[in-house]
Length: 226
Ligand code: C5P
Image (cartoon, rainbow, N blue to C red; front, side, top):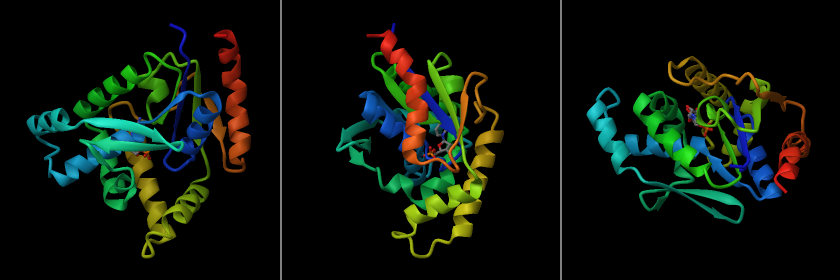
């Protein structure tokens, strides 16, 4: 099996998906935003008032959740049971809930299974929190992204502010810090750098510089498969 896997993990709002998208476009690899999957599950849990202490309810919910990705105009659209939810999963209610949902064992087992299936047959770039540690421990290239927390909050603020006039920079900073705390301290596959992951601190790097940095790591593998 010679398909190439690029695993990109890191903190919230580090620019993982921007980099992963650019890379997949350049190399014609499939791109999978694993965070979008957890967000869609969290949205379903919110809408259906799933009791997160009830294993039966969680199992039932997971059976009822069908996720699909559509790629159009280099944008990834996530479809939850036939409905496009790409925008709704980015809103605050889901952002506040997702880390708790993603810490549930049953949820992780199901998502990891689906993610591993997607990486079986094609070259793939996947971003998330546990891609290099749990989903694809044998990925050829693993990147661990970080950036100054203040810069991350500012970037996210610029992105969200136009549509959310009431949102403050402080709120975003707190929300990111809280989510990072939950993601790094949870019992099951917490966010941690894999031993063989390369650290990419992009505080002072442009998107092009980040892309070049990762291309330099991936291209040797692409050459090998030619
Ligand atoms: O990447 P994004 O910020 O959209 O991810 C949302 C949340 O989903 C993360 O804060 C984390 O709690 C969860 N997640 C995860 N494992 C992944 C991807 C995301 O636990 N591989």
